Amino acid sequence: MLSHLPSSVVLALKKVLFLLVFVVAWLPFNAWQNMQASGLYSLYAWWPLFLIFGVLPVLDHLVGRDPANPTDEQVEKMSRSWWYPLITLLVVPVQFAVLIFGAWVFTRHGEQFGLLGQVGWILSVGIVSAILAINVGHELIHRRTRLENWAGGLLYASVCYAGFKVEHIRGHHVHVSTPEDPSSARFGQSLYHFLPRAYLHNFLNAWKLEAERLARRGLPALHWRNELIWWYAISALLLAGFFVAFGWQGALFYLGVSWMSFTTLEIINYVEHYGLHRRKLENGRYERTTPAHSWNSNFLLTNMGLFHLQRHSDHHAFPNRRYQVLRHYDEAPQLPTGYAGMYVLALVPPLWFRVMNPRVEAYYQGEEWQLSAGQFIQAAGRHTA
Image 1 (tube, rainbow, N blue to C red):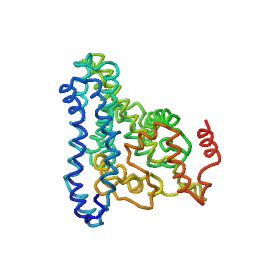
Image 2: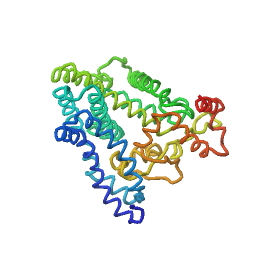
Image 3: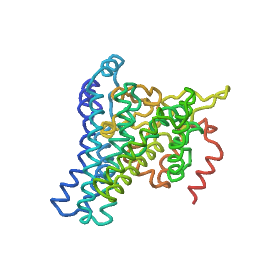
Image 4: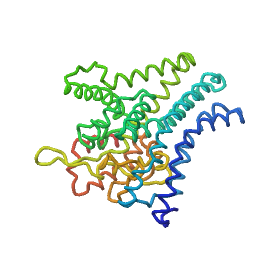
């Protein structure tokens, strides 16, 4: 739809389209409005999930791909703009407003939902919270200003997953697309094999990395300078706050929303690096991370709501680039649809393998040694199961 527009026009349009994140934040309130208007509380509890996973993938293909890559001159100018950091920082209070509103609806009107509606409401607020806290937090923890970096930590603490702030920067970005990184899914590995290992690794490796950082300063792991202690303390205070304000149901709601949010993070991790590998060099080191080591998706609409997260190839090749100047690479491995569609596909391993395994094999055609015999056997076993 936009492929024939000049790049400068698309970039100007995107400056406004990044505000779509606040439309996402509005979805729970819109669902509540529909509940009151129709009386169908249990049905509209699932409304944000339906829009994100049912309607958005269709709109992605109708709107089409993003044709605009900023020039070096535009990158320099856009990187200095105050507008783009402001949007991400404004998400912080919005995220807390969504959590409080969601808990209020869940606890004050839960009897009108029924069990199915309650589950739908937790998952719906959880996916919205993932887009706000997880996605925007990811952008902010990569920034070097204290305000932005701490704002990113606060967003992750708001969904009980602050270890990601440490592990992602010092662990995942170092070992991405290697056997040393459990956050990079192997060829033939199902989502349900991947998730428990990702949860455990994220938590344990964050503490290990932070302990190593403190040890280099001659400090013990359990020290007030351990940032994880502070972030997890914030999560504990939030849990206590929801319990005091909304009772045990409020605490249950908060934990459920947090689970949905950080599970979404790990599902997207699964999608972003599935089956891709960095070559091991003769000196025993792995090759430098390039755009070839992350799956790219250049569908415009989802990219606007996710602050260019789908231009993941450029992010891993140049992790200090701000979201607004990330570029698309045609030569990077390409996903067949946006993250919303790939999320649903990953939930059904046979369909995931049917769609993605041929793409991995085609990408490594002529270099099949990149995929170990064990991985091919593992995948084949799953296909015939």
